[in-house]
Amino acid sequence: MTEPGSDEPALAGSARRAARRHPGERRSGSERRATVAPAAVERRAGGERRFSRERRARDRRTPTAPAAAGTPAASLERLTNLALPEPEAALHWRAIEQHRRELERALQRDPGTAVAALDYFLHREHRLSDPAIIESATLAALRRSAVRDSLTELFNREYFELALAREIRRRGRHREGFSLLLLDLDNLKSLNDRLGHRAGDAALQVVGAVIRGGVRSVDVACRYGGDEFAVLLPDTGPAGTALVGERLRSRTAARVERLVPAAEPVALTVSAGMASFPRDASKAAELVAVADRALYLVKRAGGNQVARYSEGGGGRT
Image (cartoon, rainbow, N blue to C red):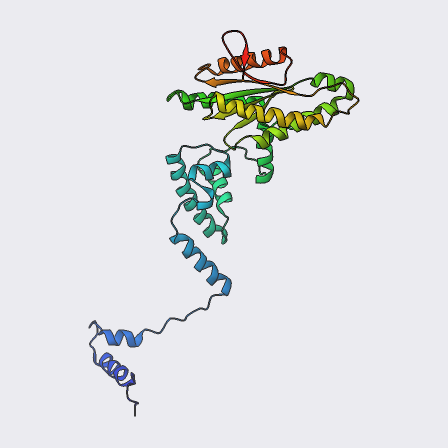
């Protein structure tokens, strides 16, 4: 006797029909179900289940650059040092995400975006031929040293020239103004002769620290060469430049004066000449020349001043 709800009567009936069926006659659905044994379920290990879940989750994600890394172009330049246009970088980024999933299936682990990008450009696109592995902090330090003066920690002359040319290109189309300030540490040679070059280096370090602390983040402060410094001041006219120059002059003079013993007859002061674009000049070399002439006139007059060159032959604050 079968219990209510049991499948046994149905299965028995299917078996009887199968026995009465003529050869070649098509089986009913219940007969086919009755003869198919349930598939054995193999239990997967926990690691396999976790890997499968992680892979499905990654396969569903949208292949876009991580928000923290910025645009695809910025992300790829950070990872591979390749500078690519944004549309091309976006295409490569999607291909790298696909390549990452392929590597993951082959390796049974996620290789990460950095490894996937390196393998993609090395073996798929052949855009890299001999890449070097370097820590990002070390790379950042190398990049910094390439554009910075090691003594003063200001930008170097090469960076200044690039920044000045870029500023003129950017503002020349609209004739928007900016200014250039050239500063010179007076009597540095006398300090070196009397107290040695270590004292001179200490004075230059003080000037660098004062300039770094006395300009805005948008300003570009550089060591132009020797005892001369340059500061690019975006959106700043002659009056504002004179104020910045005077502030840097007074602060630097007060700081470097402490480096000289009272018995030494060396007066460390700061001179500054300034020029404004496009009022005084419209080309990079001309702008530097105008500021340099103003600086020359200040130093010839005894130094320790801030002046702008005038066509009358003199400097004026």
